[in-house]
Amino acid sequence: MNRNDRPIPLHLDPALLRGLTQRRLSRRDLLKYAGTGAGALSLSAFLAACGVSGTKTNPTTGASGTSASPTADLLKEIYGDGTPAGQLVFANWEDYIDVDENGKSPTLQQFTKETNIKVTYKTDVNDNDPFLARIIPVLQSGGDPGYDLIVITNGGPVERMIKLGFLWPLDHSYLPQFAANASEAVTDPSYDPGNTYSVAWQSGFTVIGYNSDAIKEPPKGFADLLDPKYKGKVGMFGNNQDLPCAALVHLGFDIQTSTPDQWQQAADVLIKQRDEEIVRQYYDQSYIDALENGDTIITQAWSGDLFIAAAPADFGGDGFPEIKASIPAEGGILWTDNMCIPKGAKHPVDAITMMNFVYDPHIAAQLADFIWYVSPVPAAKDIVLNEIDDPLVANSSLVFPSLDDLAAAHKYKVFKDQAEEDEWNSIFQPIYTS
Image (cartoon, rainbow, N blue to C red; front, side):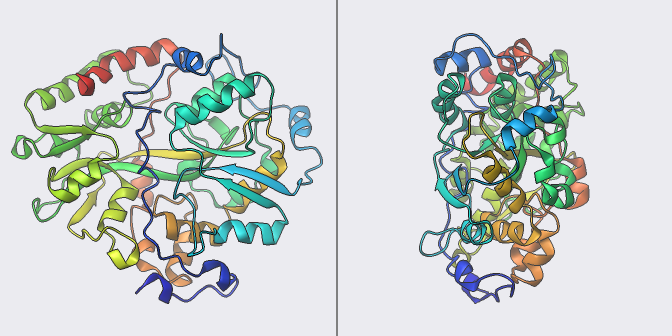
């Protein structure tokens, strides 16, 4: 079925949903993964790059950077009586929201129709660190960052902003849809306990992608990426989270409680894989091209990219049905792009109203049906299947993972301090940069 042929849910405005046909690039097509990759900066180096001297202590976090409950007075100061201003400036990644043939977002149009909040939507986030480097000096000076709502990733960027005190805490009394509908996979995350500063926009798995024409037996886990029979045909991520976290899980270590000795054991596995020339290359986004053109036949991969690669061309995909995904038996790595309100935002009530809006299952369904990453709202699955009539998306474990896959998933390492992060980077970064 072509995407234009699907019946539209009766409660939605058909004019808002027509034309969801054009090929979208992956949300990560422009991403060089500087938030966790070779270009990743330590907190001190990141601040220096931003022109910020010293550090800032977040009054609503503890000594270790973990979230503490914001006071009622602070929340009242931020959100007032809860009356929206009627405008919202929303910064997101390219190709990361539903868009019709006229370049308009049905979700944003419907939001304005229902709330009378006008949205200025900007695709200004094409990499975490450069984006944050632009707004942090403004935040430190107490100025208006120019955005009311931003989408940034865990594994470094969100944690930095929390530790620096540059995000407004959220008043969860304005988030009933989140409370009712959010997946357990995105509630109370290790990088932001209690969702004090963030709620998920979309998530993704780091899993294994493979060419089923070349590999008949689906890979079972990370060990397949170490197999000498695939020498020179294996792709690995060149960043400081996906690469080491997957290796740690392979060895049976808990990422969050892992020790430097265990990090070295994981590094030894990766060094052996590299030195035996099993790895063809350490990739950023270009790994999906290598898998499609045959340079690799098995690779670390992001879930949404694999969905796009395999989906039929007339459906908006790349048309490579031989490209398959395998979630490792030991569990995939689940990362999350998060909606946050930067400190100094002029319209925080409007921002938190949007956060709540996208957790309505019908809204989450139309977003999931277009974005093709992991939806934070499990109830959206039945709507995609039965109302939007899109079984390809609804039945994909890459968009709506099983409870077992989510329960087995692991999160990026959350560092207790800068010294720990520096030691981690010193162990893993030379593997893919040397």
